[in-house]
Length: 276
Image (cartoon, rainbow, N blue to C red):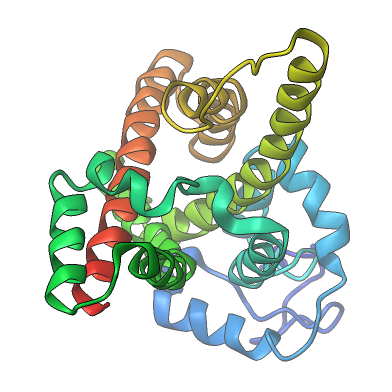
């Protein structure tokens, strides 16, 4: 007798007679089916977001584990959550994950690009003081959209990282990646606001700022505090491997996420330069 993975009722056909969920098997779920299912839900707001958001933030890996074990109807679809998190991200100020200096940080993320931008402005006969705001506006356009590329790329990394497992389904890694980056969206929207408040308070009391730039060492310190422990707990929950192997993979995740962020920022700068 086969039971519904969502509500444990007895299955007599393709759909559960109690909760309506379709017979579920992660092995038979393709990325195309995963996206097609999510697309149907994007026309309306899913209020499950309010109950699942605390689980996403404070119970790392729980939502991914629920999905891969077939308990789907109890929770918001992963891709639907990710899209709503990005709406929140953009409304609250998506610059948290990107450098705030705009043009002035170009050389940091793409060596020599700053001088090429200056040359392009001169070739077009536009004063640099006028060209920089134009470039920054164009840069912001790509920052909004390139971020979505990180989810499938990170899932490919996980697919390679767990190559030896029999249950190494790409969809599992896509779901994990969606939840992980959704957490990053929330964390790097809320936590920088707290940092700016504390930095302003420090300046008000002592007459100087605690740090001048949020990027670089400050970003990495925040990442180590708020993301690395979350990643370890999520990997342990979803993939259920021993502590030391999970620590090794958490370190790998740390470097890959930092690199992907650097790559994403570099690409936004270069695309803004090419298309401006």
